[in-house]
Image (tube, rainbow, N blue to C red):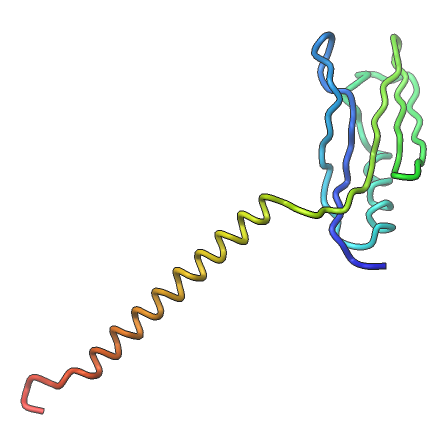
Length: 131
């Protein structure tokens, strides 16, 4: 069991009428084992309120090999929400933060280097008042 970072994903029908589409959203990120992520995903799936139907007559939650499937029966039709755990391999936001932190560290190191050079030049000057 290795500690990794997991995304808790929900996929569901989004929009209404002719503008319906299937969309995925990240509910949250979890650091830990896959089993810990699945346990957290189950908590989230049990409390999840889907977009459709607005007032489900029946809601059922199933465990699948990848996570969970919530089936919500409305008055006209049924809607599904699929919940899954996915290992996070790349995050552009984290990469941008790391690059910004590296640039800031480089900027601070350059400022310290310049301050040290300036102090060394001051210390190397001979006093003008007869020293």
